[in-house]
Amino acid sequence: MVKNTGTTLHLDAGRTVNAPEPVKVEEAPSGNLPLAVWAPRRQVVVNTGDSWRIDDEWWRSEPVSRFYCNVMLASGQRMVLYKDLVTGRWYKQDY
Image (cartoon, rainbow, N blue to C red; front, side, top):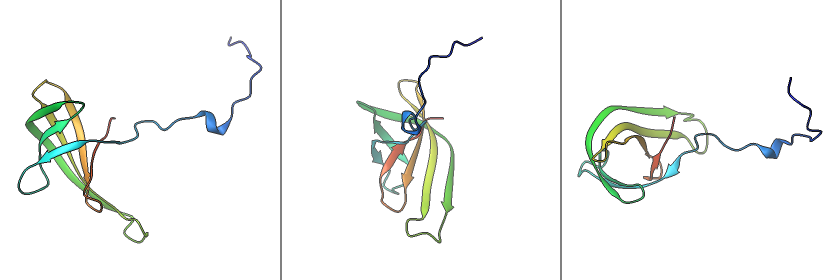
């Protein structure tokens, strides 16, 4: 049985899980495929796996339009990146 600590949980005690992190990406001339990622130092993308696009909530003032790709870096690290097609910024998304 778990002991009652006597403390009250507050709604602000939580934190966002798997929040996207902005990253610097060197893009291919086409603009949508990453060639290198700075996370935290420059790492070359050696393989781009699956890629997909999400266009959602088009009726809102800030629609969601993203290009995702699963990449492998020269270090062997796998990473899911996405480019916000509205702002042009790249993000790392953990799952």
